[in-house]
Each structure stands twice: as structure tokens, then as C-alpha cells.
Length: 185
Image (cartoon, rainbow, N blue to C red; front, side, top):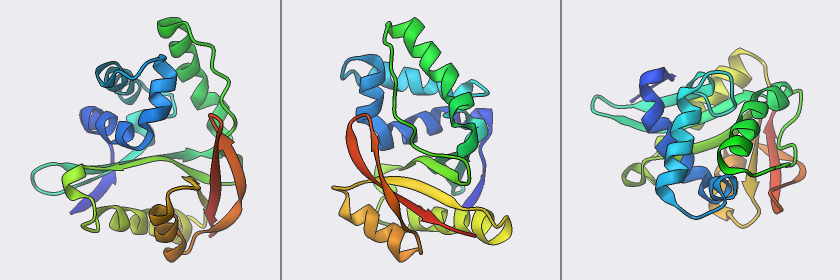
């Protein structure tokens, strides 16, 4: 398995993986629970440069046959800049005015969304990808990695804590209570 910076050609995989991670949020974006519309929206953002879900802000894990996982991360200081085209597109396309809470902030590289092919889950792909990001951002670049985890997702929280993340407080995202975890460089 190799982990590399994503390219435009990875956009379909990225859209699928990010949708796995944030399906309920994407349904709020489009105003209905329609997987086809949700996937089309995420594919639009994955292909488009200069937004928070762009391939430019993603890394992928692949084996010799396929892309197994995608992670979307960016400098938290750029949240408003990267989010603006997303909210504008949703307003134009779906006539929805969204005002999501700030999920990240300056001073951290934010792991926004992270998805692994369902048939590869539980096989260490996610852990390896997180370990790569820790090595790349925390150890090599001396940056802080941050993420939100649903308070109800005990398995994910345990994984992040086992990898060294520490509580940095609580945040709310689309009305859902989340634990804010960080790993500092």
C-alpha cells in the first residue's frame, strides 16, 4: 500500500470516500437523503480546485489495483476561504443558506473527512493512513493535526487516542456534539 497526494484522476474515489465519512452532513447540504445527488455533489467538489473538499486537499492510499481510502485535510486557518465556494455552490444549486459552525481554527492542520472502502475497513488501512499523516505533518513538519470525532463513535475515538491525539475541547458541527482532538508537533 502506498499513500500519496491525490490527483484530479482520484476525484471519483475521493467523492465516494468522503461521502462515507460525512453522509448525513452532505444530506443537509442538499436538503434530502438522496445518495446519487450527494455523490454528484461531492464529485463536483472533489474535481473543483480551491475548496475544502478538492482533490488538492486530499491524500489517498492505494494498492496495485485500487484507491482504498481518502483523507481530506487542510490548514485550519484557511477554513473560511475554502468553505466559501462550497456554501456558494450549495446556495445556488440547492437554494439552501447554510451557516455551519467553525469546525477548525488557525494553528492546526484539520482532518476534515476520512473514508475507507467498506471491504477494507478493519484491516489496518485507516490506521496506516493516520500514522502516515502523523509522520508527515506532526513529526516532519512540526504541525498540529486536529479532527472532530462524534461523541457517540467510541471506536474511532479510541483509535485516535491510541495514536496519541489528546482532547482539545468540544465543538458543535451542524448541531451535533463532537470531541475536538489534536496531536501536536
